Amino acid sequence: MAQAAVTYESVMHDLKARDFKPIYYLMGDESYYIDKISDWIAENVLQPEEKDFNQTVLFGSDVNASQIVDAAKRYPMMSEYQVIIVKEAQNVKNVEPIEKYLKAPMSSTILVMCHKNGTIDGRKREYVKAIQQAGVLFESKKLRERDLPSFIEQYLKAREASIDPKSTQMIADAIGADLSRLTGELDKVLLSLPESDRRVTPQVVEDQIGVSKDYNAFEFRDAIVNRNILKANQIIKYFDENPKAGGLYALLPMMFSYFQNLMLSYYCPQKGSQEALAQWLDMKSPWGARDYIIGMRNYSGMKVMQIISKIREIDAKSKGLDNPNTAPGELMKELIFFTLH
Image (cartoon, rainbow, N blue to C red):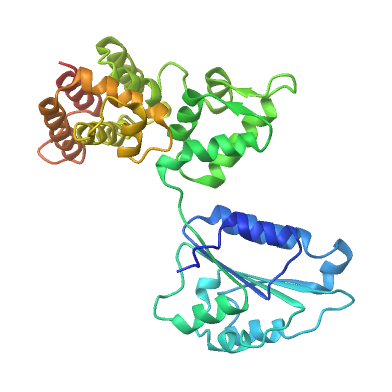
């Protein structure tokens, strides 16, 4: 619903240039960017001495739209702006008063509406249009799993640190797409780095986040790609004996994703070229295509189809279908044996 040109970077660029809009409607399933924008406005628009009289935080479950508009129509006291932040904006029911207000908003008011875990009802087109004409409508979308490595790399690069691909994948696999938790863990890693060496290595990840540098999803995938039977079984055994390292079933989506892409790789017109294969699989970097070229050498197309079918069978069994009491470790051993033999 948000305008295509409205990104987190574009919003922050204008805010830092003090090009303020009368309304910022921040919505979506990823709370991280909503919090980053609203926190920046709360911390930086007004001077500390101006905030007591000119900065207000409201909650959508406690106020109605008319009360929000009444607050927005006030003039600031000894300040150029007043800031009104409405949290839980999704709980504001009748938005017509706000829609009407936005046709002639106060230029001295910055109204920030924080709508988490969802977006504006698609039927409220006039409300959406009023927001877009008066200010900023920003949708904060969940980051896709495939984009996590790039996010991690850029986050660290912006803070003058570097990271290798293995360490990146270890963090992505261990933390997932919860950006608030992910950035918290990355900040912890950054604090541990000495000024003389700003590199994040597998050892740093193991020490600071608690992910084994030898037994993790990255190494497991590498064992599958290279058909390394001993290594794959060692990792399965480690996960089975150390539940805190991560659930065995977390490896199933990774295996399915790999073999699904491997199946697609066979249809690539230039499957021997990393660049062509990366483009075919819609990958951001040719580096990752190497695993599929190796995989095509180690697995026939027919075997890949059989493995995908077996993964689906094990997934169903893991959910109790036709499986009264087989333990997760035994199911994974069954899958690995079928895959690698």
